[in-house]
Length: 609
Ligand code: SF4
Image (tube, rainbow, N blue to C red; front, side):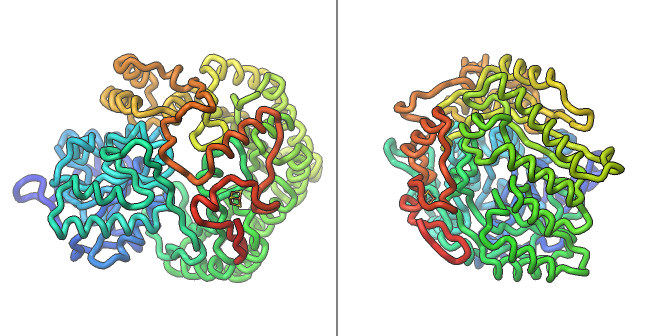
């Protein structure tokens, strides 16, 4: 299919000469292996991940929905990504609008434009994408000639800062609701319904939030897949021409995590825990490798080594992949001996590096955040890993957690020093020079639907002081310390718990040049500060705002299944440093997700909840 930008010229003829003038032309090429193209379809959708190709192409949700929509009769789905700044400038200069990869169609000509809302630092990219596509930013400015602008992803759980830019937002897992949305759209089209009639029909679908029509008091409950094991696996994903963030075959082995870390939004959003069976996983991996030729399989989830059949899965995959040159990877390691055993099962001779996340330096603070691991767990996991042949290890921590003191910060350094000493003791004397440990320190950002949703982020000056405390500690020479930029964490915190008033801030920041905020070299705090001043808001006040536990919250109309009462009780337990066990192992702790969502925890074929 060709689309003309100027009489007599196709879009490709216009774009091709630009590719010699930009970085990574492969970001804009099409026809990758396994890419699908259905020119005969009468209903055409595009999915956009609001970042570059190499970030977005690695996103699993895009891959799942791409496969699913293309599997529907008479429907096609294409991909779009945000062009990097060099291509963006050229496209603006030449009047080229945002196009899809598969057919190089202008996105504005399609029926549906689905946009992932991945995190707070992507919001300006969403506006950039809409504007580049020639689509009005605000839902109330669109008419029948524009595609339906559908949002989804983690950002749907506090949609208000972005609500006025979307026609509809799907809350929760997208596999079923996306098909229902398309079905409603097709029916509306068949009866020549107006845009408003379409929105009214969409608002009737469970889990769909239509900001323009939302009535006060109505609650949108997230959608959840009941039988995750029966949910098709994408076994023929697109194989990119160029390197992307995760260049491998990925299979989601379980969904959800109920360990209950109190800072972790994903741990609350994706409850209840549901597993794919060992048989499903092993068969899907065989097919996935045959369909792609990847030389690595990632078993992905929030907590892969918690899968009830993980040992069996790894042993069977090792057997199946033996002699093929295909390796297996786990996203991060459980902080105990079992975690290291499982890492050993997948590593073979290639012991690249291990990742552990103790998150805090003292037991008191780990209890506050419900990170149910001890110093002994960390030391013995490190000892076991280094004596098994690993030489490098990365440790993740957070700074600015509720209840943190300077003693907790200094304890991070002491803990890492002890882990480093244990690692050195565990390797032969001649190899000790090879031992490397890195510690990565993120700034705590309070997130909605967590027990810490009421608390504010600590002030930026205080974050900087605490980082200075950590940098002032004595670390062994083999330990490398990295910390997250407090300025971009401020923007994350300012937006994460804000209400609809933040829309004007986001739009002003974008108009002031903010985009690609998650990229250190592109992040412009000055654009955000100017925008805040322009719209009469304070970034610091938004980020540091403390909500009373009994006041209404801007995201109260979105229900992730976990009850507000549970979150509040967890917050109170945090204040007393009392931990809560994982319901996957000890039984239900009454978070509310199973009854509200009419779902259940499904482990190794058993279901409960
Ligand atoms: S309702 Fe109970 S079993 Fe279900 S996720 Fe919550 S705590 Fe776990």
